[in-house]
Amino acid sequence: MTKITVLYGTETGNSELLAMDICKAGEDAGLECTNFGMDEIDSAEFSDIENLLIVCSTWGDGEQPDNAIDLWDHVEELGDDELQNMKFAVLALGDTAFDLFCEAGKEWDRILEEKGGTRIYDRIDCDVDYEDEAEEWIEGVIATFN
Image 1 (tube, rainbow, N blue to C red):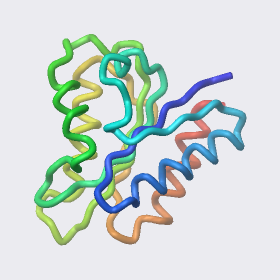
Image 2 (image 1 turned 30 degrees about the vertical axis):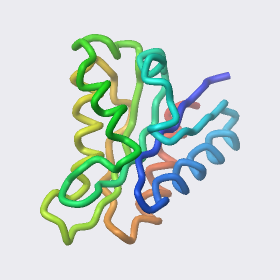
Image 3 (image 1 turned 60 degrees about the vertical axis):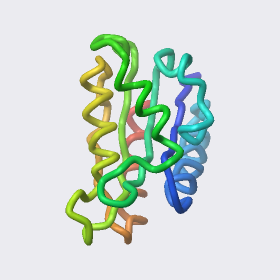
Image 4 (image 1 turned 90 degrees about the horizontal axis):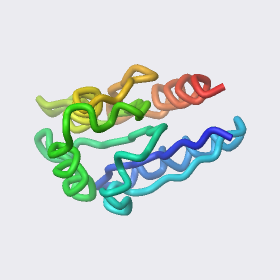
């Protein structure tokens, strides 16, 4: 059974709710799915994740949400090929009223690739009315595992 890990970075809870939706869709498709807040995962185990889906909101003016900062700092320090066994996809949440729309999600997408990860599905940048776009992303990314 394929295992996927969903990590969420959030300030208001939207990313957490979407992470739960992703796991439900994954389980319905026969996948083994776990989800964690970015502050709940042991950073020492991060590099061992094989199938990673990230849902991350942008906070303030382009910043990582509070629960993502420590993991972000850890990933920045990894070697260039340290994530070569990781397949990943990113769903970014933001607000177009800010200049750095979805910046935190864009940064995760960039750094996971820089550290050797393989993108398996394109990032979608969602505005405040994210439900339809997020649902489309969830359906598409889960289908890549079947």
